[in-house]
Length: 134
Image (cartoon, rainbow, N blue to C red; front, side):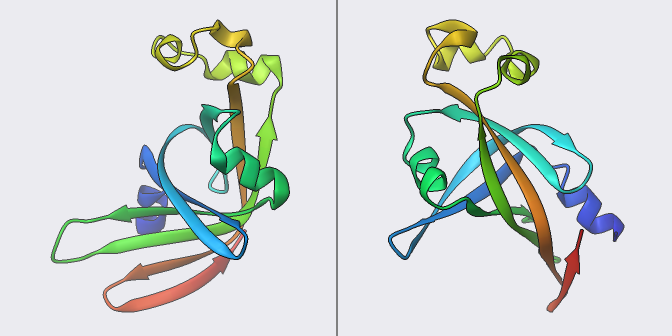
């Protein structure tokens, strides 16, 4: 895998996409953990609109970019989103800021983990794009 792609995949903020009713939705999310180059974890509210959308349709995309000029770089990953409610995984992700969002602590029913597994990707830089797989 290209070193520029690897650098992009290490960014802390990703734009995460879902689909509902034939319409796309996207939001910025903080990456809480990675497994290799194609698995990413995000902490979120179980009651969020995105979680409901991924329950209906697990297809998802994750986009990372480097916005500095003169060379814009971006990589989109396509795959599936899984909603994780496993206590051990939640414990692994819990940090000192989690209490700000989840007042009920680690067992708060509104706290869940999203696990995105990429199946393919597309990298853009210097007016060129290339597809890749995992």
